[in-house]
Amino acid sequence: MQFKDVIGQETIKQKLIDSVNTGRIHHAQLFLGDSGHGSLALALAYAQYINCENRTQNDSCGECGNCQKMYKLIHPDVHFSFPIVATKKKAEDQDPNTDFYTQWRTYMQETAYPAYREWITKIGKENQQGNIPVAEARSIIRKLSLKSYQGGYKVLIMWLPEFLGIEGNVLLKVLEEPTPKTIFLLVAEDESKILNTILSRCQILRIPRIKEDQLATALEKVIHAEPEKAQQAASLAEGSFRRALDIFHSGEDNYFEQFSDWMRSCFRFDTAALLTWANSIAGMGRENIKNFLIYSLGVFRDSLLIKQGVENLATLRGDQLIWAREKFAPNISEDGVIKIVGEINEAHYHIERNSNPKIVMFDLSLTVGKNIR
Ligand SMILES: [Zn+2]
Image 1: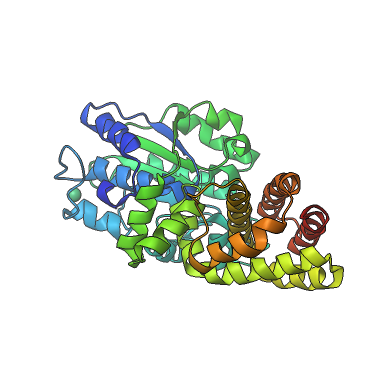
Image 2 (image 1 turned 90 degrees about the horizontal axis):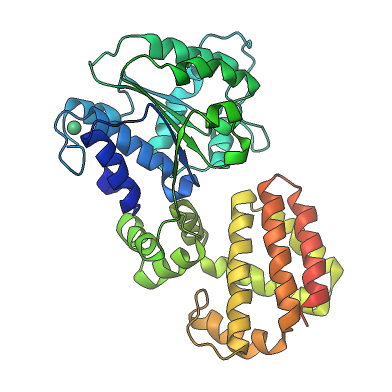
Protein backbone atom coordinates (compact mmCIF):
# COMPACT_ATOMS: atom_id res chain seq x y z
CA MET A 1 0.00 0.00 0.00
CA GLN A 2 1.33 3.43 -0.88
CA PHE A 3 0.66 6.55 1.16
CA LYS A 4 -1.33 7.94 -1.75
CA ASP A 5 -3.83 5.09 -1.31
CA VAL A 6 -4.47 5.93 2.33
CA ILE A 7 -7.48 8.24 2.68
CA GLY A 8 -6.66 11.67 4.14
CA GLN A 9 -4.41 11.75 7.23
CA GLU A 10 -1.90 14.12 5.62
CA THR A 11 -0.34 15.23 8.91
CA ILE A 12 0.32 11.68 10.07
CA LYS A 13 1.69 10.67 6.67
CA GLN A 14 4.12 13.57 6.72
CA LYS A 15 5.29 12.65 10.21
CA LEU A 16 5.96 9.08 9.13
CA ILE A 17 7.72 10.14 5.95
CA ASP A 18 9.89 12.60 7.87
CA SER A 19 10.90 9.92 10.34
CA VAL A 20 12.31 7.84 7.48
CA ASN A 21 13.98 10.70 5.66
CA THR A 22 15.67 12.03 8.78
CA GLY A 23 16.70 8.54 9.88
CA ARG A 24 14.70 8.77 13.11
CA ILE A 25 12.49 5.73 12.97
CA HIS A 26 11.37 4.84 16.48
CA HIS A 27 11.66 1.08 16.93
CA ALA A 28 8.32 0.67 18.75
CA GLN A 29 5.39 2.70 17.54
CA LEU A 30 1.77 2.42 18.49
CA PHE A 31 -0.77 3.57 15.90
CA LEU A 32 -3.78 4.34 18.03
CA GLY A 33 -7.21 4.89 16.51
CA ASP A 34 -10.17 3.13 14.95
CA SER A 35 -9.04 0.81 12.13
CA GLY A 36 -11.67 2.60 10.06
CA HIS A 37 -9.64 5.80 10.42
CA GLY A 38 -6.83 4.07 8.55
CA SER A 39 -4.44 3.10 11.35
CA LEU A 40 -3.57 -0.24 9.76
CA ALA A 41 -3.49 1.23 6.26
CA LEU A 42 -0.95 3.80 7.50
CA ALA A 43 1.20 1.11 9.11
CA LEU A 44 1.18 -0.86 5.84
CA ALA A 45 2.15 2.19 3.79
CA TYR A 46 4.85 3.07 6.31
CA ALA A 47 6.38 -0.43 6.24
CA GLN A 48 6.37 -0.30 2.45
CA TYR A 49 7.99 3.15 2.44
CA ILE A 50 10.69 2.04 4.85
CA ASN A 51 11.72 -0.90 2.69
CA CYS A 52 11.13 0.57 -0.77
CA GLU A 53 14.22 0.55 -3.01
CA ASN A 54 13.26 3.68 -4.93
CA ARG A 55 11.27 5.78 -2.52
CA THR A 56 10.73 9.44 -3.27
CA GLN A 57 10.31 12.30 -0.81
CA ASN A 58 6.59 11.54 -0.53
CA ASP A 59 5.90 7.89 -1.19
CA SER A 60 7.15 4.42 -1.99
CA CYS A 61 7.61 3.66 -5.69
CA GLY A 62 4.98 0.93 -5.88
CA GLU A 63 7.06 -0.96 -8.44
CA CYS A 64 10.27 -2.29 -6.96
CA GLY A 65 10.60 -5.88 -5.76
CA ASN A 66 9.99 -4.90 -2.15
CA CYS A 67 6.87 -2.90 -2.99
CA GLN A 68 5.54 -5.80 -5.06
CA LYS A 69 6.08 -8.19 -2.17
CA MET A 70 4.34 -5.78 0.17
CA TYR A 71 1.31 -5.67 -2.10
CA LYS A 72 1.07 -9.44 -1.95
CA LEU A 73 1.90 -9.43 1.77
CA ILE A 74 4.71 -11.89 1.17
CA HIS A 75 7.68 -9.69 2.08
CA PRO A 76 10.02 -11.99 4.03
CA ASP A 77 11.02 -9.22 6.45
CA VAL A 78 7.54 -7.91 7.20
CA HIS A 79 5.61 -10.05 9.64
CA PHE A 80 2.01 -9.81 10.75
CA SER A 81 0.38 -10.68 13.98
CA PHE A 82 -3.35 -10.48 14.70
CA PRO A 83 -5.99 -11.99 16.96
CA ILE A 84 -6.99 -15.55 16.15
CA VAL A 85 -9.58 -17.90 17.62
CA ALA A 86 -8.72 -20.96 19.64
CA THR A 87 -8.24 -24.10 17.58
CA LYS A 88 -7.92 -27.70 18.61
CA LYS A 89 -4.16 -27.48 18.27
CA LYS A 90 -2.24 -27.42 21.50
CA ALA A 91 -1.23 -24.27 23.31
CA GLU A 92 2.44 -25.04 22.82
CA ASP A 93 1.92 -24.98 19.07
CA GLN A 94 4.99 -23.34 17.56
CA ASP A 95 3.39 -20.92 15.17
CA PRO A 96 -0.36 -20.62 15.77
CA ASN A 97 -0.99 -17.75 13.37
CA THR A 98 0.32 -19.66 10.35
CA ASP A 99 -2.98 -21.52 10.02
CA PHE A 100 -4.77 -18.22 9.62
CA TYR A 101 -2.24 -16.50 7.45
CA THR A 102 -3.89 -17.27 4.10
CA GLN A 103 -7.21 -15.94 5.39
CA TRP A 104 -5.46 -12.89 6.78
CA ARG A 105 -3.83 -12.19 3.44
CA THR A 106 -7.14 -12.54 1.62
CA TYR A 107 -8.84 -10.26 4.11
CA MET A 108 -6.11 -7.63 3.86
CA GLN A 109 -6.42 -7.67 0.10
CA GLU A 110 -10.13 -7.00 0.45
CA THR A 111 -9.61 -4.06 2.77
CA ALA A 112 -6.92 -2.18 4.62
CA TYR A 113 -9.71 -0.79 6.80
CA PRO A 114 -10.65 -3.94 8.69
CA ALA A 115 -13.09 -4.49 11.53
CA TYR A 116 -12.31 -6.86 14.37
CA ARG A 117 -15.74 -8.55 14.40
CA GLU A 118 -15.71 -9.10 10.69
CA TRP A 119 -12.27 -10.72 10.89
CA ILE A 120 -13.26 -13.02 13.75
CA THR A 121 -16.41 -14.03 11.89
CA LYS A 122 -14.28 -14.93 8.88
CA ILE A 123 -12.05 -17.27 10.85
CA GLY A 124 -14.45 -18.54 13.48
CA LYS A 125 -17.89 -17.86 14.82
CA GLU A 126 -19.31 -14.42 15.54
CA ASN A 127 -19.37 -14.87 19.28
CA GLN A 128 -15.91 -16.37 19.65
CA GLN A 129 -13.30 -14.27 21.36
CA GLY A 130 -10.08 -13.36 19.60
CA ASN A 131 -6.73 -13.82 21.22
CA ILE A 132 -3.03 -13.42 20.46
CA PRO A 133 -1.62 -16.51 22.15
CA VAL A 134 1.70 -16.60 23.92
CA ALA A 135 2.99 -19.08 21.35
CA GLU A 136 2.49 -16.36 18.76
CA ALA A 137 4.44 -13.88 20.88
CA ARG A 138 7.27 -16.42 21.07
CA SER A 139 7.10 -16.99 17.35
CA ILE A 140 7.45 -13.22 16.83
CA ILE A 141 10.60 -13.19 18.94
CA ARG A 142 12.00 -16.04 16.88
CA LYS A 143 11.22 -14.39 13.56
CA LEU A 144 12.68 -11.07 14.58
CA SER A 145 15.89 -12.64 15.85
CA LEU A 146 16.65 -13.90 12.34
CA LYS A 147 18.79 -11.91 9.98
CA SER A 148 16.87 -9.71 7.56
CA TYR A 149 16.47 -11.44 4.20
CA GLN A 150 16.64 -8.37 2.04
CA GLY A 151 19.16 -6.46 4.12
CA GLY A 152 16.61 -3.79 5.02
CA TYR A 153 14.43 -3.38 8.08
CA LYS A 154 12.55 -6.19 9.75
CA VAL A 155 9.06 -5.03 10.59
CA LEU A 156 6.39 -6.58 12.75
CA ILE A 157 2.89 -5.20 12.27
CA MET A 158 0.64 -6.31 15.09
CA TRP A 159 -3.03 -5.54 14.62
CA LEU A 160 -4.92 -5.21 17.91
CA PRO A 161 -2.30 -5.79 20.62
CA GLU A 162 -5.28 -5.43 22.99
CA PHE A 163 -5.67 -9.17 22.52
CA LEU A 164 -2.28 -10.03 23.94
CA GLY A 165 -2.81 -11.59 27.33
CA ILE A 166 -0.55 -11.02 30.28
CA GLU A 167 1.84 -13.58 28.76
CA GLY A 168 2.44 -10.96 26.08
CA ASN A 169 5.02 -9.61 28.48
CA VAL A 170 7.49 -12.07 26.94
CA LEU A 171 7.76 -9.43 24.22
CA LEU A 172 9.10 -6.77 26.57
CA LYS A 173 12.71 -7.65 26.14
CA VAL A 174 12.62 -7.34 22.35
CA LEU A 175 10.57 -4.17 22.62
CA GLU A 176 13.18 -2.71 24.89
CA GLU A 177 16.33 -3.94 23.21
CA PRO A 178 15.40 -4.89 19.68
CA THR A 179 17.94 -6.32 17.32
CA PRO A 180 19.23 -3.58 15.00
CA LYS A 181 16.94 -2.46 12.18
CA THR A 182 13.87 -4.02 13.75
CA ILE A 183 10.63 -2.11 14.04
CA PHE A 184 7.42 -2.86 15.88
CA LEU A 185 4.29 -1.24 14.57
CA LEU A 186 1.39 -1.92 16.90
CA VAL A 187 -2.02 -0.95 15.56
CA ALA A 188 -4.52 -0.56 18.38
CA GLU A 189 -8.01 0.83 18.91
CA ASP A 190 -8.36 0.87 22.68
CA GLU A 191 -5.49 2.20 24.75
CA SER A 192 -7.06 1.06 28.01
CA LYS A 193 -6.88 -2.60 27.00
CA ILE A 194 -3.20 -2.73 26.15
CA LEU A 195 -0.74 -4.10 28.70
CA ASN A 196 0.77 -1.10 30.43
CA THR A 197 4.22 -2.56 30.21
CA ILE A 198 3.91 -2.61 26.43
CA LEU A 199 2.20 0.77 26.16
CA SER A 200 4.96 2.49 28.09
CA ARG A 201 7.61 1.25 25.66
CA CYS A 202 5.94 2.63 22.56
CA GLN A 203 5.86 5.97 20.88
CA ILE A 204 2.17 6.73 20.47
CA LEU A 205 0.77 8.10 17.25
CA ARG A 206 -2.89 9.05 17.50
CA ILE A 207 -4.85 8.51 14.31
CA PRO A 208 -7.74 10.97 14.12
CA ARG A 209 -11.03 10.67 12.22
CA ILE A 210 -10.92 11.06 8.47
CA LYS A 211 -12.43 14.36 7.36
CA GLU A 212 -15.96 14.11 6.02
CA ASP A 213 -15.25 15.51 2.57
CA GLN A 214 -12.29 13.15 2.16
CA LEU A 215 -14.51 10.21 3.10
CA ALA A 216 -17.12 11.25 0.56
CA THR A 217 -14.49 11.64 -2.17
CA ALA A 218 -13.09 8.21 -1.30
CA LEU A 219 -16.53 6.61 -1.64
CA GLU A 220 -16.97 8.23 -5.03
CA LYS A 221 -13.56 7.05 -6.14
CA VAL A 222 -13.44 3.55 -4.67
CA ILE A 223 -17.01 2.35 -5.17
CA HIS A 224 -18.24 4.96 -7.64
CA ALA A 225 -20.91 6.21 -5.25
CA GLU A 226 -23.10 9.08 -6.44
CA PRO A 227 -21.93 12.33 -4.84
CA GLU A 228 -25.10 12.90 -2.85
CA LYS A 229 -25.22 9.38 -1.42
CA ALA A 230 -21.49 9.44 -0.73
CA GLN A 231 -21.91 12.69 1.18
CA GLN A 232 -24.75 11.27 3.21
CA ALA A 233 -22.89 8.09 4.19
CA ALA A 234 -19.78 10.16 5.00
CA SER A 235 -21.78 12.43 7.27
CA LEU A 236 -22.89 9.45 9.37
CA ALA A 237 -19.59 7.60 9.43
CA GLU A 238 -17.82 9.37 12.31
CA GLY A 239 -14.58 9.61 10.38
CA SER A 240 -14.38 5.90 9.63
CA PHE A 241 -14.04 4.73 6.02
CA ARG A 242 -15.09 1.31 7.14
CA ARG A 243 -18.31 2.60 8.61
CA ALA A 244 -18.95 4.82 5.60
CA LEU A 245 -18.76 1.73 3.37
CA ASP A 246 -21.05 -0.27 5.63
CA ILE A 247 -23.60 2.51 5.76
CA PHE A 248 -23.43 2.94 2.01
CA HIS A 249 -23.85 -0.76 1.27
CA SER A 250 -26.57 -1.47 3.77
CA GLY A 251 -28.56 1.22 2.08
CA GLU A 252 -30.06 4.20 3.76
CA ASP A 253 -33.47 3.37 2.32
CA ASN A 254 -33.48 0.15 4.24
CA TYR A 255 -32.57 1.90 7.50
CA PHE A 256 -35.23 4.48 6.84
CA GLU A 257 -37.88 1.81 6.47
CA GLN A 258 -36.82 0.14 9.70
CA PHE A 259 -36.66 3.46 11.47
CA SER A 260 -40.14 4.56 10.41
CA ASP A 261 -41.60 1.15 11.38
CA TRP A 262 -39.94 1.48 14.74
CA MET A 263 -41.28 4.97 15.31
CA ARG A 264 -44.83 3.92 14.40
CA SER A 265 -44.79 1.30 17.16
CA CYS A 266 -43.07 3.66 19.59
CA PHE A 267 -45.77 6.34 19.15
CA ARG A 268 -48.45 3.76 19.79
CA PHE A 269 -46.34 2.26 22.57
CA ASP A 270 -47.28 -1.13 21.13
CA THR A 271 -45.02 -3.41 23.16
CA ALA A 272 -45.85 -6.56 21.18
CA ALA A 273 -44.90 -4.83 17.93
CA LEU A 274 -41.77 -3.43 19.56
CA LEU A 275 -40.71 -6.88 20.67
CA THR A 276 -41.15 -8.24 17.14
CA TRP A 277 -39.21 -5.29 15.78
CA ALA A 278 -36.36 -5.77 18.31
CA ASN A 279 -36.08 -9.44 17.35
CA SER A 280 -35.92 -8.68 13.67
CA ILE A 281 -33.36 -5.89 14.08
CA ALA A 282 -31.24 -8.15 16.31
CA GLY A 283 -30.92 -10.52 13.35
CA MET A 284 -29.07 -7.89 11.28
CA GLY A 285 -25.74 -8.52 13.01
CA ARG A 286 -23.80 -6.25 15.31
CA GLU A 287 -22.09 -3.99 12.79
CA ASN A 288 -25.37 -3.35 11.04
CA ILE A 289 -27.21 -2.62 14.29
CA LYS A 290 -24.51 -0.14 15.26
CA ASN A 291 -24.86 1.61 11.93
CA PHE A 292 -28.63 1.63 12.25
CA LEU A 293 -28.26 3.28 15.68
CA ILE A 294 -25.96 5.93 14.22
CA TYR A 295 -28.47 6.52 11.44
CA SER A 296 -31.23 6.87 14.06
CA LEU A 297 -29.15 9.40 15.97
CA GLY A 298 -28.83 11.39 12.75
CA VAL A 299 -32.60 11.37 12.16
CA PHE A 300 -33.36 12.46 15.72
CA ARG A 301 -30.74 15.18 15.58
CA ASP A 302 -32.02 16.49 12.26
CA SER A 303 -35.63 16.37 13.42
CA LEU A 304 -34.79 18.42 16.45
CA LEU A 305 -33.12 20.95 14.17
CA ILE A 306 -36.18 20.99 11.90
CA LYS A 307 -38.29 21.87 14.94
CA GLN A 308 -35.95 24.76 15.61
CA GLY A 309 -36.15 25.97 12.02
CA VAL A 310 -32.62 25.01 10.97
CA GLU A 311 -32.29 24.39 7.21
CA ASN A 312 -28.90 22.76 6.76
CA LEU A 313 -29.22 19.13 7.86
CA ALA A 314 -26.63 16.38 7.95
CA THR A 315 -28.59 13.16 7.52
CA LEU A 316 -31.98 13.69 5.97
CA ARG A 317 -32.48 14.26 2.27
CA GLY A 318 -35.24 13.79 -0.32
CA ASP A 319 -38.31 11.79 0.73
CA GLN A 320 -36.88 11.16 4.16
CA LEU A 321 -36.59 14.90 4.73
CA ILE A 322 -40.19 15.46 3.65
CA TRP A 323 -41.35 12.69 5.98
CA ALA A 324 -39.44 14.22 8.90
CA ARG A 325 -40.72 17.75 8.18
CA GLU A 326 -44.33 16.82 7.74
CA LYS A 327 -44.91 13.80 9.93
CA PHE A 328 -42.17 13.15 12.40
CA ALA A 329 -40.67 16.39 13.74
CA PRO A 330 -43.99 18.08 14.58
CA ASN A 331 -44.96 15.18 16.85
CA ILE A 332 -41.83 14.66 18.90
CA SER A 333 -40.98 16.18 22.27
CA GLU A 334 -37.72 18.14 22.39
CA ASP A 335 -36.90 17.09 25.93
CA GLY A 336 -37.83 13.53 25.12
CA VAL A 337 -35.53 13.44 22.11
CA ILE A 338 -32.61 14.70 24.15
CA LYS A 339 -33.13 11.80 26.53
CA ILE A 340 -33.56 9.36 23.63
CA VAL A 341 -30.29 10.46 22.02
CA GLY A 342 -28.46 9.63 25.27
CA GLU A 343 -30.11 6.20 25.36
CA ILE A 344 -29.23 5.43 21.75
CA ASN A 345 -25.58 6.22 22.48
CA GLU A 346 -25.80 3.92 25.47
CA ALA A 347 -27.31 1.13 23.36
CA HIS A 348 -24.52 1.54 20.80
CA TYR A 349 -21.99 1.11 23.59
CA HIS A 350 -23.65 -2.10 24.79
CA ILE A 351 -23.99 -3.61 21.32
CA GLU A 352 -20.29 -3.00 20.77
CA ARG A 353 -19.52 -4.78 24.00
CA ASN A 354 -21.38 -7.92 23.08
CA SER A 355 -24.59 -7.46 25.07
CA ASN A 356 -27.59 -9.40 23.82
CA PRO A 357 -28.94 -7.28 20.94
CA LYS A 358 -32.57 -8.38 21.39
CA ILE A 359 -32.59 -7.17 24.99
CA VAL A 360 -30.71 -3.96 24.26
CA MET A 361 -32.98 -3.03 21.36
CA PHE A 362 -36.17 -3.90 23.23
CA ASP A 363 -35.14 -1.88 26.30
CA LEU A 364 -34.21 1.00 24.05
CA SER A 365 -37.62 0.78 22.35
CA LEU A 366 -39.41 1.05 25.68
CA THR A 367 -37.45 4.20 26.58
CA VAL A 368 -38.10 5.72 23.18
CA GLY A 369 -41.81 4.86 23.41
CA LYS A 370 -42.04 6.52 26.81
CA ASN A 371 -40.25 9.71 25.80
CA ILE A 372 -41.07 10.35 22.18
CA ARG A 373 -44.23 12.44 22.53
ZN1 LIG B 1 9.35 0.49 -4.08
